Image (cartoon, rainbow, N blue to C red):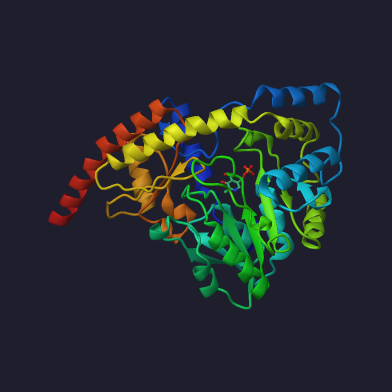
Length: 395
Ligand code: PLP
């Protein structure tokens, strides 16, 4: 057997693996409730699907410009200027699936040995993508006392001559919490003073229950330092369509766009037409979805607080809850116990960074009935852990 590249030693995405395990058990006829998936359980709105069907009927099925069709790049740039106050234009807009936007941004900027700061916990793909580029992930702690928002002081303490970039994500996966505008302002200043980039992942921007979303690129001195990444997957229930975008200042933008020409070439042609329809659609479908997510957020917070030994801060955005459980066991072991004994699939907190130990990430992109039933099962399965611990002590 040939030897694999050392870089292939990155872990597979634990969130994807746990959700696939739940699906496998379901296929075998086992009644598993999944709180793993990072995607809305709503259908893509009809107007978006109709635009894709129309594009197919019109044979819009060939290669497009690698950076995306100009009408879409213009529509995205207009949205970012209007809604996010990001001073950008079509020439600095790349149409690209969000996860690839992250990957191409890292590949274009991070050299072997460069340090990339990211919050602990953070989205599972940030450290792996940085390692693929030969870079070194450096953890910036998030504190419960600061509602898991990033703090400029914690960033400053970890800056070195090798710091190349800071990954930001608000609303955050996995905590569901948001970053404070003053802290972001101070972080933009640090980026300018210490010459590093910000990569702002804003994919949960529209799934927000409290406060207003702040794009770092909209802050004074921010645009020249920030790669802004966003996409349609979560806001428009379009995870399978693989469409999103980024904005970046020159010459970073051109380097990222060049990588796209040598990798995925472009986002699927007719999906680009559907993406225009998404951006032009009235906000009703997003509003409806967020109203339902808010009710589920309230329910999952309630259910968590009714669970002995568990605690939680009410999430302000996204569709994830980040409870801390009281039992002295690893989050992998807890997730395994809940899958085996409660038939509830969750993602262990450690998948998101060392500080995730003692936590689980629960996606509430599932019905209220499922959330209620999942917690009934979780509460039933927890006493078994107590008796196991007592038995272990007696031995
Ligand atoms: N960024 C964050 C924080 C995410 O949670 C996800 C998906 O779960 C992505 C990026 C990737 O989005 P997409 O599936 O649209 O590429």
